[in-house]
Image: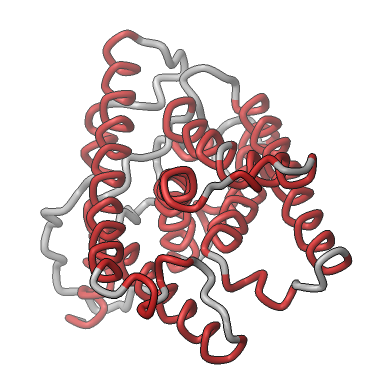
Length: 283
């Protein structure tokens, strides 16, 4: 009984309410109808997928260097955008088609609901970090050397943040709960492992600032700086989403009245009510 209650508490802690998303904020917007929002998300899904396939194909055929594709945080975070926009567009279009009453994810297992809201957190934070790190540390004269490099760098290192801002500003989703900081840290730490595994198995560093023989004492500063930057970006994104939700509620920008201060508090809920003893288990 207590074990089941602990699992229930954990899901609530990570932003998965029961019932899940009762005000349908994940599939609505204060500025677009659900069908329009679904179409826009689908457009972004198609563009990001085409970009990913094109970059992978070009690197395979032109540079014969596709083996390291999944070693770059840029590519991994962009794949996250692809996955999110395909998933969210399907859910949003289903919500519009089903009379704006419900959408499939609301009845799916809670682990899938958790993964969806965690994916939302990553696609609103990681792309911004990628953009900042690339243009401040990694860009060079070769960034716009050819039409392909110009297009790929703009798509993956500039438009990626634009896609994130679309979700942050123009939808009712978010803000993410503070508890999502921990999984984000774990993902960044896991990527650090991937970067050094890549060096051990393929002989190169995905990013020059991760090379200890070159950066020496600065390596720790870069790693700590990115970790601190992650916390800062997460906080700013959370603040923008909270402000957007309260402005929408205050000025009635959302005619469907999907967003309310109570709904925001539910999404950000941390002080969870202790579960009661029960004779049934809850996943």
